[in-house]
Image (cartoon, rainbow, N blue to C red; front, side):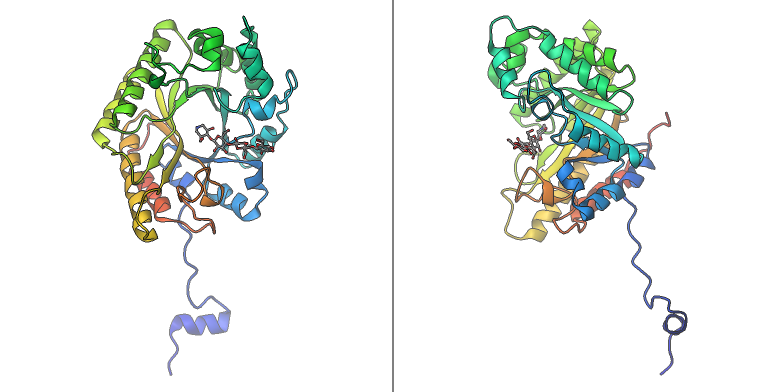
Length: 353
Ligand code: G3I
């Protein structure tokens, strides 16, 4: 029996008989090649899992704390700011030359109980808002490249003419709370990108169109008043089997955002398979197809500068059982990973900064 060259060499030089399957290039590399950033949200719990931490290191060029930088975690007791958990995540990012996004300074959820009570009391002091923003942004100055300053302030269903959410912040300080938050953040770290972040901005469904219209009015108002907001964060929580994605509609919306002078960050992308068929392969294929269409449209807009998935592996997703992330629970790449990779590979390159 004649041995093949490779088998002979393998036998004599202890070379692998079959070449190791080349690892695909990580998403962060594919993104960076086009002047984009790719990352994912992370928790301290995720970093405590060595295999997951390794995968995050390999794939992500940017991290966002899923929980650790929210006020409910940072200021459990009034006036006592504990950034230790968020500092650990920021330190991990810095140690591995990863960018770090801050999330989220002002939100109607995940606030400590004491804050909800004080905001609901008569004539609350606006320092409750601006002092916290100043302290948090100041604490991370130089370590956070981009902040979600205000999160999810739009809710047309609340019936206000301006379409804003009837949140504790709005009831306490009026619509000007958004402006105050952005001005405080800019003063605390002039170099950080300041982002308004929201969901339901992806499809032509009527409720999402309402939200898009309100967000555009909000962003135009920021410009008119000189509010230092730099980019719109589009969360991108997609559903493969609900709603309809229309690439042209989405591109027009992104074009209107860019025309107002804003960048675009896809801040929390995941693609749920709820309502899909029993066949997991069919569900995975549909998730990948939607992700590719969505990212092709998003990345066709030159103002889009980063894509963040809300987690890396289904092991840690907030959408339990809906398999929405690029890696499965055993950290195997899914069709969704390949769709994101293909979208980065096909994306038009961004002009070098
Ligand atoms: O870890 C603490 C635990 O120590 C504590 O005892 C317990 C008390 O409630 O809370 C635990 O923290 C939980 C945290 O996730 C960490 O797992 C919070 O309860 C829980 O509310 C929190 O949920 C997060 C949620 O935002 C609210 O902050 C989800 O993980 C996170 O995926 C989700 O992310 C949001 C974005 O911030 C904004 N856009 C929507 C997105 C999905 O809801």
